[in-house]
Amino acid sequence: MTTRRNFLAGGSAFGIALAGGARSCATADSYSISILGDTHFDAAPTSLYHGKWVPRHQNDWRDRQNEFKRNQDMWATRLPRLIAAAAKTRRPDTAYLFQMGDLIQGDCTDFETHLRFFKDAQAACSKGFGDLPFLTVCGNHDIRGGGDKAFDAYILPIAAKAIGKPVTSANFLFFHGPDAFIFVDFMRPDAAKIDAMLTASEGARHTFFVLHSPIGPYDGWGAYWFLFGKPADAEKRRALFARLLKRRAIVLCGHIHRTQIRRWVRPEGELVEFSANSVWRPQEDTPKVLFDSPARFGEYVKAHPARMDEDHDGCLQKRTVPELLALVEEYRPGLVEYRQTQSAGHYLLHVSEKEVTIDFYSCDSLVPHETFILQKK
Ligand SMILES: [Fe+2]
Image (cartoon, rainbow, N blue to C red; front, top):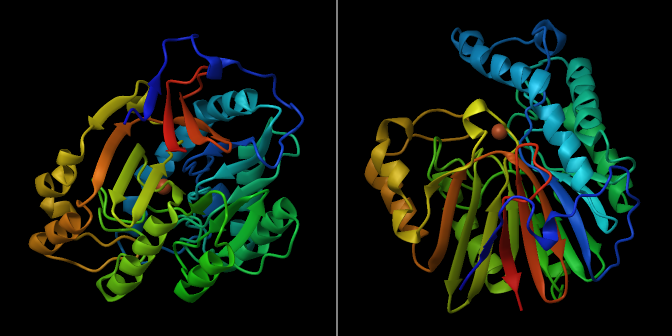
């Protein structure tokens, strides 16, 4: 199956850019969604958002300096250009702006700073999009350093406004026309509620499962830092995977700072997962394919065993390399498509009766680099 369309600069039907501020004329049956991956909003000086931050341990402050610097540099230079380009490529049929979590860097400790951080980040990421409804998911950075309450206080009302009904937690369901959107809080997942939302949306034309992390292990640092990735949650992740597969769900996520597509086809069904990334580091100026075949799934884990037992915000538990490789093997059956690219940019999801596709625009480009076919009828 051909699942990608590649473009030469300036040469595609998808490459028509619109001026920012275009009014939405989406219909329920056919519409698009602008998407930003992780953005890690931050700004200098460090004291602006991290002045009251209390490090968890002695090395915390030292370890965070590189991230603060990366983000501050990125937002002083490249990210405003990326956001401006994303705003220009929205269409008259664009119904929402999605951001895939890690909206902010986090590490504030006090509530008021965290709240201001979210407000400033949302304004920066929405610049040029006018009043397009904004929806985000909870990422690990969003609540790092005590941000749980601030996330709920600032983000949930915005979500409620975007979907036109009350939102009481970051696990929520809404419909856009015939399609179901299930938003999941990766940091505070609620298996019973996820189950209930899947049941309540049975029969939807397309089911979009939207969260910060992938739904299985991935080739990268912290490979098993994904939804229900702890050993104790093994049954939850297996049951969820089986249900999403049967449902032919489309998973939209971020977290890994790569543009990635994975597709599983098994007798029970089909499941596709797409990871978006907007963390634009200099090495992402030009997209670079890292893995491009299912046979290569797990190569990073094999090559970097020492990096697999690091603690990530207290979310993981140490595992042996054989345990990790067994986890990877669990997700190999039926993996028919796997492509991971070191790249950053912005995205435009197109939804219609006959297909769901996503255009990837590299960095601040106004022309798609390639289009991924997520689902075709
Ligand atoms: Fe991130």
